[in-house]
Amino acid sequence: MNRNACSHGGIYSVDHRLVRVDCSSSVNPLGAPKAAIEVIKKNAGSLAPVYPDPECRDLKASLSRYLGVESSQLAVGNGAVEIIYWFAQTFAAKRVVIAVPTFCEYELASYKAGADVTFVSLKDGFELDADLLIEKAKGADAVFLCNPNNPTGMLSNAAVRKVVENVDSSTKILLDECFAELTDDPAANTMIDRIDEFDNLLILRSLTKSFGMAGLRIGYSVSSPQLASRLAEKRVPWNVNGLAQAAAVAALSDAGHVARARAVIRRERQFLYDRISKLKSFVPLKSDANYFLVRLRDGDSTKLRDLLLKKSGVLVRDCSTFTGMGLQHIRVAVRTRRENLLLLKALEMVDHGR
Image 1: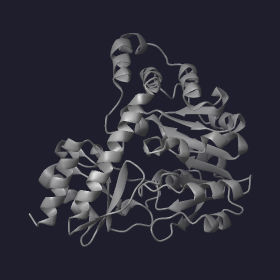
Image 2: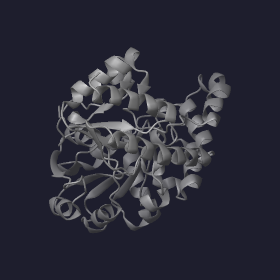
Image 3: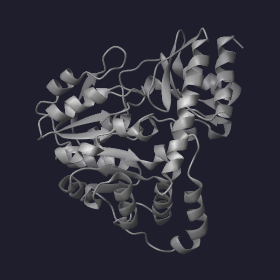
Image 4: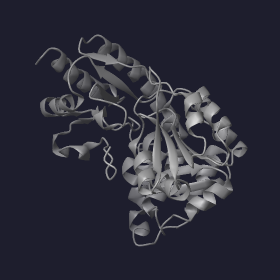
C-alpha cells in the first residue's frame, strides 16, 4: 500500500456519474432513519449558525443509554476514522501489529504516526491466527483488530477474545466493531460488555454503518475513562458538526431501524450467496456481516469492477488494494432486493460473456 494513500469504495472512488447501484460501500441498506433526516430538516436553520457542542454532551448521553456505559468512557469522532488516527497518534510510538487483510486506515494511520507495522496474515479461510498475533504483539505498542473483519465479513469472536485476554496490558488494542450491529446476533459479537475488564482496550463503533449515516460522519469509541481522556487530547475543537450530533441523537432513539436492517441483511445475504453460487465465474465466500467476498475463478478484480460499472452502472469493491490480497476477489455489499437483483444481472452478464 502507498504509505500516503488508502483506497476505499464508494461512488467517489470512480466516476460517480456512472454509478446506478453502489455495492462497494457496506452501510445499512435501509439508509438513515427517518427521524434523523427530519431532525436535520427541522433544525438546520437554528443549528447552522451556531457553533456545535465541542464535548458532544447530548450525543454522549444518548450513546451512554444506548450502550449501557458511562459517558466518561466515550469519545466521539468525525467518523470512526478520526478516532483511528487519534489512537495511532496517541499510542503507536514505535511498532504496531495488524492482522491482514483488513481496513487500510489502521496501517496508514500507524505510518503517519511514525510507527513500524508488523503484519500477521490471516490463516487459510481468512481466519484470525490468535496465537501468532499474540506472539508478534510482544513488545508492540498497539494491536489493530476488526470483528467482523473488513473485507472478509467473518467474525472471529473466540480468537479476538483470546488476543484481548492474553496480549500484555501495556499494549493498547483497537478493536473495530463498526459492523457488529449488522450481524445476526450483535449482543454475542461484541466485547463492550467486558470493557471494564481491560484498561488497554478501545472498541470502535460507527453510525455510518449501523444507521446508514456515512455522509454525516459520526464515529465513537468505548474504553476506560483514562484511555478516553487521552484520546480527547488529540481532538480538534468542534470536530463533530451540530446537525450531525442532532441527527445521531435522533437515530439512536430508533434502535428498531437497525433491527429491521438486520432482518433484510440476513435474508438478502443468503439470496445473493445462493444465486452467485450458481454462476461458473464466481465463488461467494461465507460471511457474518452485511457484505462478503466473491472469488473470481479467472480474471482481474480491477478490470471486473470497471467492466461492471461501464456496462451496468453497478459498483463493487476491488479488493486488490487490501494489503495481503491480489486480484482474485471483489467485495459486494448486501443491499435491498431491487439493488441486489441489479448486481446479479450485472454478474450474470459477465458470466455469460456478454
